[in-house]
Length: 118
Image (cartoon, rainbow, N blue to C red; front, side, top):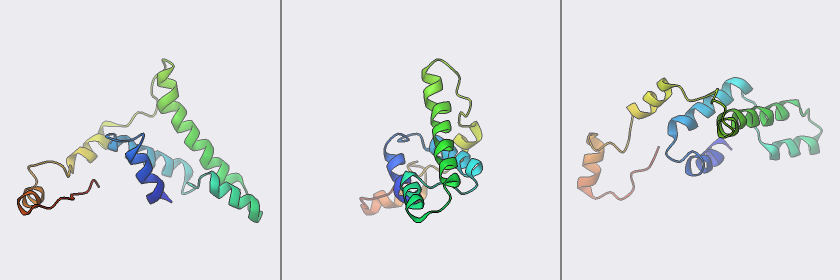
């Protein structure tokens, strides 16, 4: 599920914001301690009679992150969970699209059309 929906987030709201996407994943993992299941899993838990608390905690954590990073700044507040500089540096340090990387130069020389994003 992370791979499927992660790609949708990377190509959608987090396009060209790789460090912000990584920071959202880190905050989510730390605040949820592995409870990352979305609404569909909540529905399955209702059907199977499982406890709802873990799913609801994940949903609440995601909404809090969205509120603090998107809605509050739009309303004139400050972004409390802004992506730290070290996360930006971590992501920028390993740029795959950097033409100075030897493997990219080699791919261009051999005519490889697909280089990937991640």
